[in-house]
Image 1 (cartoon, rainbow, N blue to C red):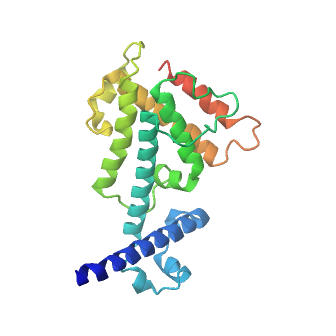
Image 2: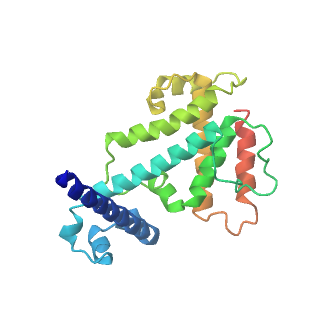
Image 3: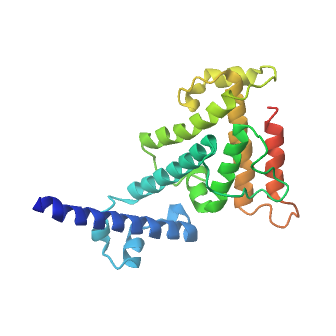
Length: 234
């Protein structure tokens, strides 16, 4: 019992230090980008020596992996909440003309709005997993598993909203190379809809978050809504 009593506070302290290290890492990423992440700089900002910090993370890649895991888990939680109707986020940041919560919309729309809310809430988190890859970093296999969970939620929604659009050669191509879908048994039409959703909405979001719409005079939220309108008939 004495050993357990002394171990628990140490574990809590370790968890607190790891959490602070990650907070400082996000601050660095916000300032200089993930490619400039430095454990020694984080250690200095915390009043620690470099070797002391390495007791909590073995190196830069382990820290980046933990940040990526956190980001994917956060998006997976947002998708789950949207898919189950338990999203506590409040109003969608889609402008005054967006449909209210009393308007019936496809699940795919709920996921789209959850994705945009999540991205706008923390653009640096978004770009860590959907922006330019960090030079020299290679993600472990379990990262792919978390990403596949997110895609599975989208594929479930796409499969639940059948499309009347005729099959295309691209449908067959996606079906042939469905490893990107993580083994999900979705029909070819659902694969096509999911791919259209993923590429088009990420394209709009990436441009918005990078500031490329600034000064163009239109509301990015309405552009996002227009893309959703088009995706409903994809």
